[in-house]
Image 1 (cartoon, one colour):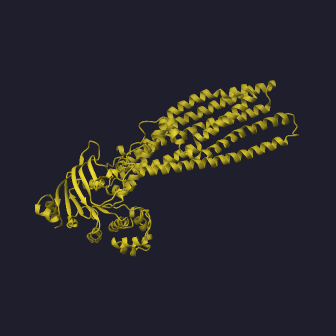
Image 2 (cartoon, helix red, strand yellow):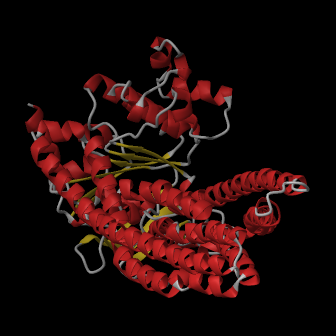
Image 3 (tube, one colour):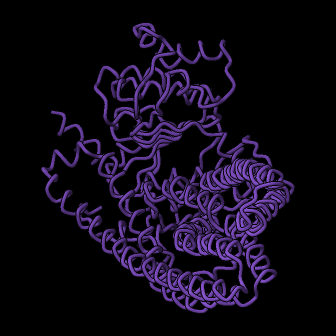
Length: 595
């Protein structure tokens, strides 16, 4: 991959086809469905909060008009007590509402995160080759968190604001319809301003989220391969590329800031003009004696409460826009069907005779170059098959097809005569033990990396350590099997990681052992140890080996020689040397390079 930050791999991951908003909201509501009883309780609390919203103003109006205006506080104690009780009750309702709202939001997001992770676990290998890890991490973390913000302060909170507005408007019209109408004159102008803001800010929000995901993907790749960056003195161009991604993010973010910088002052201007109109009209009516001072003050107070959720609408809209942009990408991921399919009535695999490649052809991209072409071959049970060939001959692709990480473009892979597409994928892969050239070690202890979440069998674990010759390594470690290996196993040598891979494979008790250049990157002494391990375990296992060092496969029952995706020679080591063909030339070249 190019080191340039302009690669399409790091472009904004906006969804090209923007889904309808109501469709997104309906899909999001599905995650609230299991908690509908809690939602009903929340709705009840919101209704109580809306009723309590207007009661203090009513108490103030009566206190002023019936007591303060007459200069007599006799009998005002019940009103004052009711006012204080309402304030505390409102506090309790708001506290309960916030706690319940947060609980519902977190539970819904937990369900969504788990669904996303389960979905990612089922994606095919090609899916991960086309989607950077940093971008997928953003889906599961940042995008889901944005949805949580929407649940806690987005449309659920908007429902509470709507109930408060209805209660305030009803109270206003019940007391003075004309003043209530003056207060509501602002609404058409607010709707117009909000619509303009929505159109201007909406696309900026979507692009901002997409650019942020691109930054995450670029950062994850560079930090994971920092040694390669430094080795090639690529720090300067990497900084420039990262700066370019950040500037594109900044440009999108500034467009949303501009929309806000216009919208907020417009809303403040409209609400201030409305309050001025109410005070002017009510002041005139107070002078005429048709409106009481208590009613004027109560109206001013409720008008402020009426405009508060309207002013907060921009913040709510910010949360909603960000959440909508995140939900577009989340549902794009959940709707992705790039996976290895499995039949509903999939059969349980049973390896008794042989695995066969029957006319296998494969290209990584539709219509692209064929990596394998009409390949025929058989892996009989109990036999040791080795594959050799130049780089790019299709050797590793063969293992990917065999493990069903990819399905062939043409032809079949059969297990005892049954198309492997008819078999249970997990159980079929459970037949294999795979050891690769580049071993991946998870963070955690040595033991955890051997077990990989499988039940611990102490007796089997001891046997595996002996078979893989990892026991001598464990004895030297201060914490033994409980030793932390570090990120990607950085506290282990290359040879120790390879022995760990063998121990991990043997613990699974596979029926077929797959080796993909397993000894290519280690020293001769460690290679000899691994060859000893391999010699012991291969006596009772079917083995399929991709070899780099031809000296390691001389005892194979059959050697396949591959060129350009085809098997051009088959036979054992002695037979192939006698033919003096491609294999003999490979042996000669490797012998000359050593000498």
